[in-house]
Length: 219
Ligand SMILES: *Cc1c(COP(=O)(O)O)cnc(C)c1O
Image 1: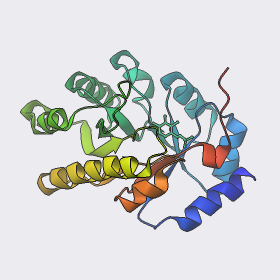
Image 2: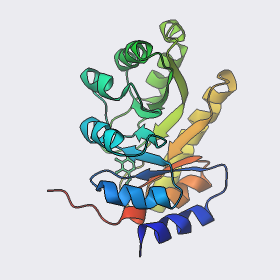
Image 3: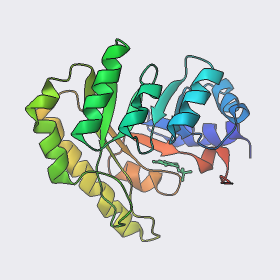
């Protein structure tokens, strides 16, 4: 099936308040342009260098999201253009994003990545640490970043009950934070294998790669 077909099929099944981030990591510019020409504008990449290169090469009305782990020393490469960073997991990183956003005279929207999976290797803050970060008075002084929601990844398992429970937990945390924070509006959860479960648990932003672009091959 073509990229256009896959994209339109997913979009036709999504509630209209849900944003689809087309995850184009490892895929060539031609693949992105096919989705672009089908009307899609929101794309996600997980590596800073690849993201910056694709930004240079491709139409400037694309809304680029960083969905992979971000090191402080690389923030400067994406600060001029990135529209949402999904993976904020420390105050240090937030401060650097603020600094680079200020240099570019921008306000950069950020999500806090919360660890909901049981695997050891998944990045993210605990609920307590996310809470501490949101309530940190120094964060309120950072005028060039805005924390607009949460992102999470479920455990890579076929156990749908476990996956649903993890998404449900993130939705509960999101709902609690939302009460005190009027800027909070994005709950980024769900990928190709689990976005339907994520939507059932209240996700309003899904990050889908292989179902749109086909399997990735890493060399
Ligand atoms: C790669 C990736 C996705 C998309 O994965 P698919 O299974 O191809 O849909 C979503 N979120 C993050 C953080 C990713 O790294």
